[in-house]
Length: 555
Image (cartoon, rainbow, N blue to C red):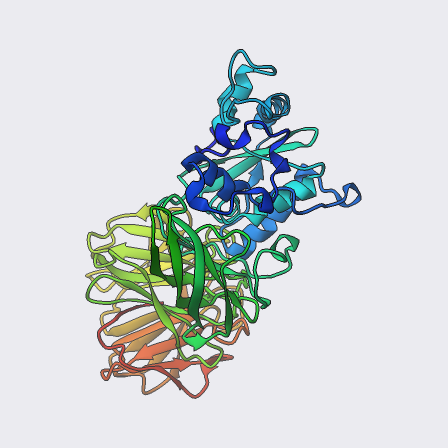
């Protein structure tokens, strides 16, 4: 079976002793003075405070499959991808749920099983350290209880490292365990949504209604400090910006949680593909004595919907731009329908060894444009878009490309269903490669290309099924090179003049969402200009940005 991921201890024995069922906790039943609680009981308070608040009727109940569906719906809004049901751990989860039912009133901790206790099974004991339990007569109530807590919601169920999940039950006891390829984020302070991609985009979830003592329709942005050190948060203030623009908010102490947490509730729902910044400040009760004012920065990007528009990483239907600076930092510049590039933010570091990067098409078939990068040593790597302006590695896909220049990713030059990569050798020859999960093939498709200064893949330029090349000669003349069923150049025609003087010229994608690839160029002054493709020509250029002279531009 898939190995469940280890998680934080869920239910401390001290918190459960003498309680008929752990769901019997009500917020008002917890001691008002956090400093009077043991470390174990404070942890249990933090994790289980909202249990029993939902009261969902059986008539409106869900099934484990629909619970998974609702979790996946939230995960997609978070931009972290869907998880699958792991039926292989269901029997173990059911066994441990039975153990919880039989032993909830004992001194036994529920994250372990004692061999002498009623209901002990080897399978249940193995899964116990990885289980999150909830008392509810319905699956809808169990889901609401899990989603009510920032830890369970943001760090577990919506964690981007989860690969699969399983569910089990015994009567009113509902349990889940998840499997993943990595660990959940640790350490404090934390902000949810966070830079790992945890960001809810709607306020439609019923479990949010009673958690915050202020108004607003946006999903709360929560700061969490170490609840083993701090108690109640008061005097919560903060500011929030969306792509640099102020967002009205209401500050909340998240009553009745009041456990080292504060939140900003936006006046409007969060938007997809948007970079949010700001800060949350709160005065916290120090459990060891006194009070302390703390501030936590906000910096996250909301997940984007897949638009299938080439170059669009933010879900707004307009191509965006990547660039690196002299420090090897990767920056993301948000595009627009006009072709201009606006708000920018840093999305990576350690890119100093990458000297070329280009759109690679949708290699992993998730509806977003992926990118191909070449290092100084000639190794080629594929990077997948995460829908938030960031890239995750798809691994090395080729090597030995350090001697090529004028590299460009073309669409499909021979209509074989595979994108093509073209580059110029030191002998001024042009070679074509197949671009997929790996780069294969090497076919010479031309010679005598020494006078060319730029080579660009612009899709089909003459309206047939074969994607073509655009070349700019040193005299500024623009040529269209038309391809055929063998992926070679079958004809050419001059299609423009006056294109000299660019030190960078590339295709970032489709700015207009009209299905045609547009161009962007940079001049000696560091200014960017975008050219909208219109048929087999380009519209009047639009200034797209300035002060780009120190950047290495990647489309």
